[in-house]
Length: 260
Image 1 (cartoon, rainbow, N blue to C red):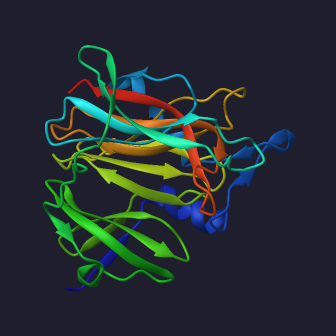
Image 2 (cartoon, rainbow, N blue to C red):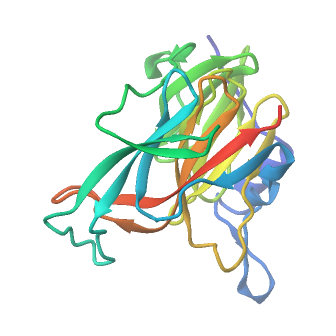
């Protein structure tokens, strides 16, 4: 199949005029014109914090969708030098968000995951300087993401390809809702912000950040089986949760409930 890349005049102006980098405005302030498109997530969902110890990680839903499972560093918490205490250990918990109850469990069930409509990288259109990673067929077109020299998300409809993300920062695809309406991705190189793309409305949504809380990590988004909820972690620091392994973000768990 022959693919044609389609860019809006707005996005072309960004990449040609700014060389794919963010521009600098008055007083030396940067102007991220892609991030300026992000609307307040409160327009389409309610968001609430469900844990507050800054020790949680890896939340996910199970097939039933009524509980959230996650791991928590129980004692002690790693320090900011990334040193891992020998006796630190992680406990497994489940949260009943309907009845607002937290339980300690011995083992967790398998992660809920939906591969319906999955498209492998070899079946995706190649991008110059970018390598297709994976895609999903949705009612709104083929959605796929790339790696390599750049990290972007694309939509392919018939013989046309639309570049959905184009900002000065990379977009890291994280999850797609089972109903294939919402895409969750992280935007940024340093302090990741969680962005939700509503494919039905072609709109981007994020949680507003003030100058006080701009240095946050919003990570690990996972959708519920019915696509009504999204769970993720808000972290202020990156800690090493295991000895001799990569640093893992620990934070608080937040729950998003979509209005539609």
